[in-house]
Image (cartoon, rainbow, N blue to C red; front, side, top):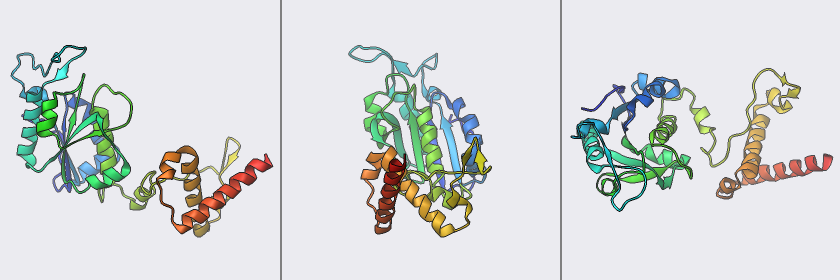
Length: 263
């Protein structure tokens, strides 16, 4: 009864998604880097709708919460049976993640760790959440996208899938691009520029037009350190700097101090 929409033939990683709204994923799975990864057969993605596993005449999968209160709660049985169907297809060792605001907040480092899981099932919640017994019996861990509220787990599922797919070898054409992404080395990415050299009266930094790759690399590292320090002090505070990074950061502070003086 599973609704298989896309699947890699020689996949190295597979993601199963449990969702009440599988149609949301159609355009997303066909576009961009992820779409190319699926077409290449590197990544497989399948969808299961819990409504296909309910005995209710109207395909209902939710009910009022015990103890009273607002909203509705997703029932354990349809979700549990959907998970069982996915595991029956791909194996009992599938790692099941419930996308929930109560879980650990997803980070780039965690995505790297999930590369060790070749088969993952993402459970997208809705309404007031899911019956706790489903989490206790069928979920390996809960993951959060951040401290904010969304209508359901579909957008977090897309975010997880997009972030993970970029790390799978062969999905992104340029591996160096992935290595330089924000958070990949514990820092924000350096600022980027392209043609024209001057736009709206603003020039590209001179160093980027010199062709001196050593100096350009040093400038980029310095900018990444400074940008992380200013915009994400929490991130910067957790970064253990190498001796070279300490030198470059000191250089950044000196330049910033001089710029403030010149103003």
